[in-house]
Image (cartoon, rainbow, N blue to C red):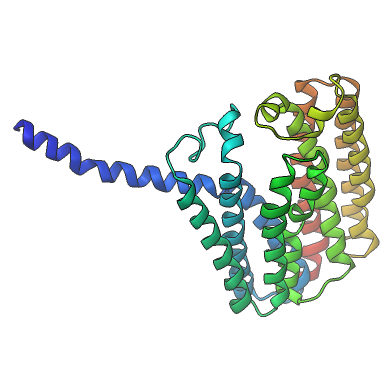
Length: 310
């Protein structure tokens, strides 16, 4: 093979290498792990609201529209935080700070997905309230929570609102109204996010400080006493709120006992962190929060959802 032919051959392979890389970068912008968790709670909210005869076709449309909104919001979050991400160790290799993608294209990508998702929900899902809830979620996440991360440590509490709305989207898509059952789902996810994100803020407190993020551990005393107390307080709040599905009769005794056991075990981790504030105990809170959420969702399905279909 001649040198020219070799050069042409190499050039011809570049697009095949570049396209998958760019697709991977765009996929990373959508924060797929977070989106997947949100979609699970959307499905739980829909199936609870639509029991005992849910419309599976509407559920699929709801998941598609919500996935688009979530992906767009995540991309816009990347766009807004690109300067901070460039300063933080754990985020400096993301597509924008690394220069693999340009701000204008990421902004356009995020806006297109978010708007397309809201429009899709508005025209395909029977109840307009689902589209309204999805639009509110995206707006609060992108336009309120994200900028507040540079202003006040209360951003975690405010950001827990859009983070708790996915099951409300699912419920609205199935029924078009709001009930005490919807409120119970919302409050569980709202309270769960607080100790969850306080543990993350502690683990990455130095990185957040470099990026100019105003998280609780960064405005707390150096020993983190306030962060420990807040983690215990919100763990207690979560334990109390977890009884609501039983109180509003959306789940039975199996759920109640299981939720109290899971909540107590999780609270123990919160207390251990408050007593001995270090990365090891904070990581135990983080892992415990994920186990708690999976467990409570499973209990809601087993004791709150399945009986409605049997």
